[in-house]
Amino acid sequence: MTFLKVPQRISLPASHLLNSIASTVRPSFMTALDKIHKLFHDVSHGALSELPLEVQLLFHALKNDFDLHLTISQTLLHSCI
Image (cartoon, rainbow, N blue to C red):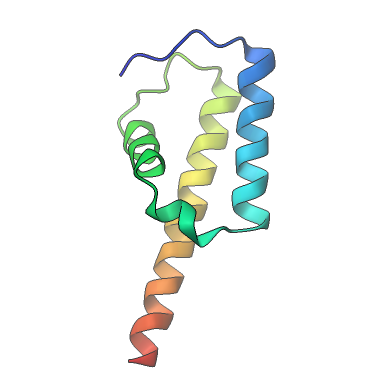
């Protein structure tokens, strides 16, 4: 995957904003979005290696947060059935 060359002064605040929204509000629809799945797939396969390390770490933290949230949701769903 080829990323546009986005200046760090934009990519870093954008990744912080996405992480804040996802971890604070936890919009459940985000986990169903194809773009989010593609982003997580790209993160898992090292496609963000051209981005600054802090941005990479934020995306990894976001992915881990979503994975944990998804696991908890599935566990709760199965315990109610």
